Amino acid sequence: SASQNAAAGGAGRGGVDPVAHMRGLTVWRPRPPSGYVALGDVVAPGSQAPRTPVAVLAPGSGLIAWPSAFTCVWSAVEGVALWLPVPPPGFVALGCVATSEPDVPPPLQGVCACVAASVCVE
Image 1: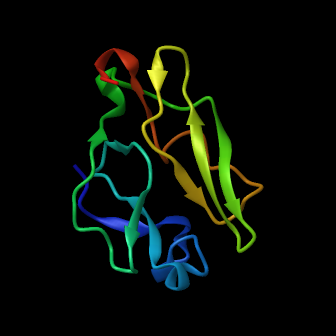
Image 2: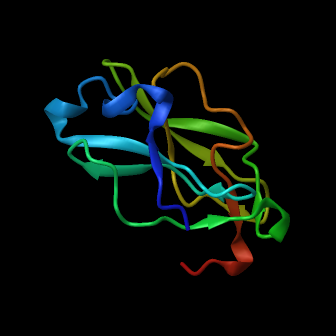
């Protein structure tokens, strides 16, 4: 699990959302240990980093695949967007990724991973 987090998008205390302090929520990007990848970003109340660890997986485990693309599922005029990973066949996306640029999706590798459907329960 990853217990350290960074404000998503590198925008500092407010994460990727420049008006997070007005909404009372901040988006955080997990910082997994070396050799692991997170399954998405975390939204937490206030501006304090989340204290609960998040699940991470190793790319060499055979349980993850990188997304083939991202679909923007929400954006705000203030410059924050949520992107859903498009999983390859046989995999599912378990989380979204936030960016500070609604027109620019996250990179396909390294930000989040999709999980093998065979190990997921609906």
